[in-house]
Length: 90
Image 1 (tube, rainbow, N blue to C red):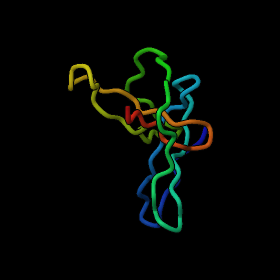
Image 2 (tube, rainbow, N blue to C red):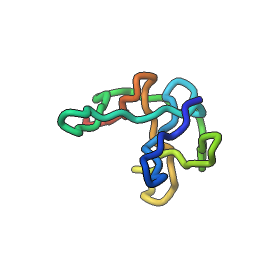
Image 3 (cartoon, helix red, strand yellow):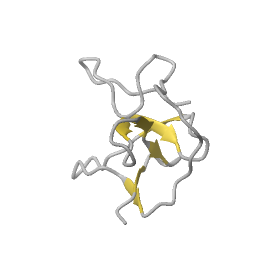
Image 4 (cartoon, rainbow, N blue to C red):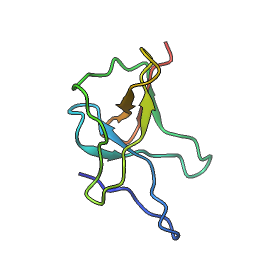
């Protein structure tokens, strides 16, 4: 399990749930030259059931969003093992 990296002020980086199991923490990556978020587009994804409040061992919370179905339910955002955030642009 990865831990969120911290900057000099103790601010945590973005972490997400691993798309293959939904519970392992993955560090989300960006390109250091253009600061663009690394993504994997058009992924089919997986549903590993409700995983609310996924945290690393230092209790830093994984990136979450609301469900596109009801606009209310919190859902953990997934990334792949390379740290690419999964994006569904279809």
